[in-house]
Structures are given as structure tokens and as C-alpha cells.
Image (tube, rainbow, N blue to C red; front, side, top):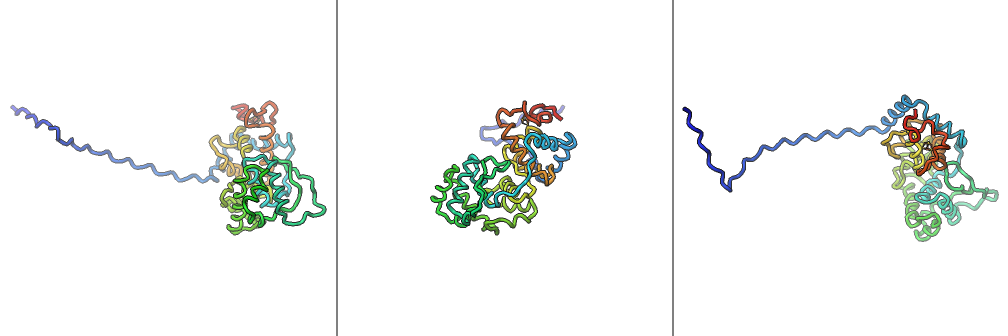
Length: 299
Ligand code: SF4
């Protein structure tokens, strides 16, 4: 016979529970290396072309038939373009133009040429009525102007209290970053190098830098604003999960350099006239046969 197992001592109130073996902490998953945005963009361009061949050409051709094919022409110098872009932020383009005109009047860089055209120039892709073809303001004087004075000058553009310091900060940064108040040196830099140079300035993103370089020099860059982005997403030219910042690089992979100005202006115009944020006019849209918003199965 085996002796009966004796019961052990009863646990007392003060007895410490046996320490449980702690589970080993799971090793943290290794952070995935960030995907190279340019490689992602190139892969998307290849995929889009395979799945929906000729889509971008179709869109550009249809829009050209409807609104004309935009051709780049020289317009404002780069610093004027930059300051005008700052003035348009959250303001109507037409008001920004009035504010820019006031800068020219108050801080002239040169006497008005006697034969200067006073007819406003109307530029495709630009939402205002255009500006007379006149020399830029004296940017050094604008930069040194007392803030209350500059605020009053640009008040017609709206949000003057915020924009006056931004204008001066941008002008100061151009010089502090090794540039100047003409920026002509950017014309000879490779496009992405020029974009990086400009977008290193606080408050200037890819879109503003691309606008300045494309419009002033014809540098092959594709600015993506809210209109371009909305139309592109609806048609299916961009991946569903892309964001406007990444869209700049997607377009660089999808377009030939000589198509960038046309694509920018045509998509902006289409977004303003037809593909409105609310109630897009799909019934009258030349792109509808291949638009995924209009027909989710469009090829
Ligand atoms: S079909 Fe409609 S949603 Fe698509 S691009 Fe045209 S207006 Fe925009």
C-alpha cells in the first residue's frame, strides 16, 4: 500500500502567491523601411498603363478638344510668382491680384515704361483676371517695410495680418538660403533640385515651388492643387490612397516633361468649370466615358 498523500499546510492570509512565470515579451516587429516615393510612383505609372492603357492621353486630348490645348508662355518673374502665390492662399485670386498691384504701386522697382501695356494679361490656369505687364515691386523695399504699412498695402487681398509677415519671411529666406530677389539661377538647375531648393524655405511646399518654376521658367514639374487632385482621383489617374503631396511625384512618373504644363492647366480648368467639388457636371463632361466616378467599371 502506498501511503495516502498528506494534505499540505493550508495557505494563510499572509501567504504570498507563487510568482507566475512572466511571458516573454514579443519581439517588436521591425519597422519596414520607408518605400521610395519615386519608385512607388514609377510602379503606379506602369500598373495604370497596363490596366487602363492610354488613360492620361485620352483625358488630355478630350480636355484639349473642349477647352483648347494650353501652351506655356513666359509670364511673371519667379519672385513675383512666389509672392502672388502667397497672397492667393485662402483668398480669391482676383483679390490677390489687387494686392499684388498695390505692391507694385507702393514699392515700384522702376519707373513705369511709357509704352507699358496696361491691359491685364489673362493667363490660362490662373483664376484671376490677370495683371498688367509691368516691372515687379522692389523686393528689397518690400522686405524692409514696416509690417503695419505692408499689412495696409496688401489688405485688399485678405488675411493681410498673416500674409504681410509671410511675404517678408519668404523674401528674407530667399537671400538667407543663398539665393536672391530674382531667383533666375533656378532656371538652370535640374527640376527636382530647383524644387527642393525652393521647398526648403519655410512655408513653401511642393505645390508652390512647382507653380513658381513651371510658370516662370517652364521647368517640367507638375503642381497638384485641390482641383487637379480632385479630378485625378475621380477619374482614377491616381491611386485611391494617394495624397496631394505624393501626387506631385506620381505625375512626374506618368507625364512626359512637355506634357506637364498642359496637364496642370487642363486639369485645373476642368476642375473649375465642370468637375466641381460638389455636383460635378458629369452629363456634360468630355472625360465621362473613362471616369471611375461616373462609371466605376470604366476602363
Ligand atoms: S465624369 Fe464627372 S466626376 Fe468624372 S471627371 Fe467628369 S465631371 Fe468629374
